[in-house]
Amino acid sequence: MDKKRVGILTGGGDCPGLNAVIRGFTKSAIIKYGMEVIAFYDGFLGLIEGRFTILRQEDVSGILTHGGTILGTSNKANPFEHYIGKEGSRQKIDISDRCMELYEDLGLEALICVGGDGTMSIGGGLAELGAKIIGVPKTIDNDLMETDVTFGFDSARYTATEAIDKIHSTAQSHHRVMFVEVMGRNAGWLALESGIAGGGDVVLIPEIPYDINEILAVVRKRSRFGKRFSLVVVSEGCKPKGGEQVYQRIVKDSPDPVRLGGVSHIISNQVEDATDIECRVTVLGHLQRGGTPTPLDRILATRFSVKAMEMVVEQKFNQMVAISGNELVTVPLEKVVDKQRKVPRDSTLIQAGLAVGMSFGAKLE
Ligand code: F6P
Image 1 (cartoon, rainbow, N blue to C red):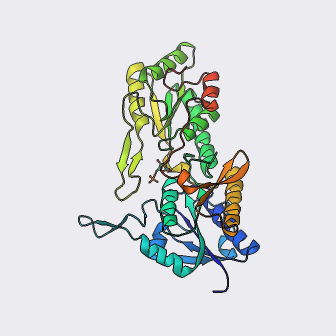
Image 2 (image 1 turned 135 degrees about the horizontal axis):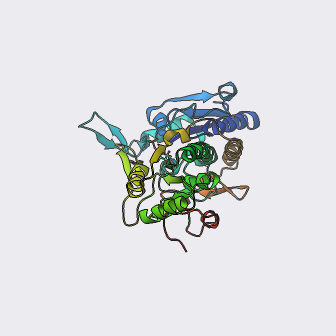
Image 3 (image 1 turned 120 degrees about the horizontal axis):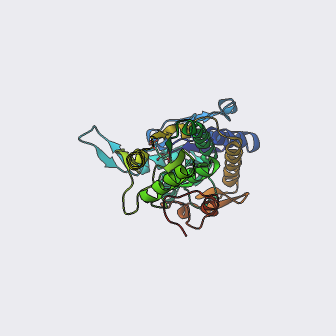
């Protein structure tokens, strides 16, 4: 082996910008540093099963604008909790030693793990076993600690805003209360920012438990003032005061098994029953994870990936690349794992929403 080798994988749920990272990293590794890039398929599953390829420049040419990940991903694969056997006789085993053997056999200088909290956490576990890990933060939820923003968020925010704009006009025509449910898991960033961008009348986020009476008050008040429609942007993770989140399914074998969704149907029925105004629900779902990345995400993904390659050369391992203001910084993986960055109550975004008459479905000071 005459060239130095560096590995990359994309883990967890996909989002726009993953291919931009794969491209940026591969090009920079080959063009600037003359290294060879080993790419694992389907996130950590490729590492577990020994499925990988050598990426050449031509493999990543033309993918900057493409959604998804050319490598595939998995939000179930975890070398520390690997399931074997058939349904009924399934067994959980730790297969991390085998992954480390492959890592050593391939002679990797480092392994770049592109993903969210789950991916960083597995990366951190491998780092403890001796792997040299560099994290690159992705997620449409924007809930990773220690970075102002993750790539993928801007594209999802754009998709959600565009959808809200479209729902706005039909809400107006039919004099309805329209609910748009967006993703985001336990963090309200996507709902909050697309809600502000789309001029939502009510925005419900997990960080502020809602009171149905507050939502009814907004809808009724708007009716009294001649506004015969309302737009409610609902984060999938929101919950009523004293109540629970609504989940759609439990994904067996997933490190984070709860899949949220459906809360807007419940609120919509409550509003329709109480006001007699017609309500409709649109759940945006995985639309928010697809499509071409926005220019901002393409730039962020490229900057992150080039920085990750610099970190390999500078031997800054077991760190995640992050952005603070407009500066790229590095943060130890342990500061990131098992935490979620949520919308703080004193967020200027909440203040801005309140100042323009937006309701958060609760009485806020
Ligand atoms: O974390 C990204 C995300 O899209 C969340 O917003 C959402 O709750 C979840 O993943 C959906 O997961 P899945 O693709 O497994 O349905």
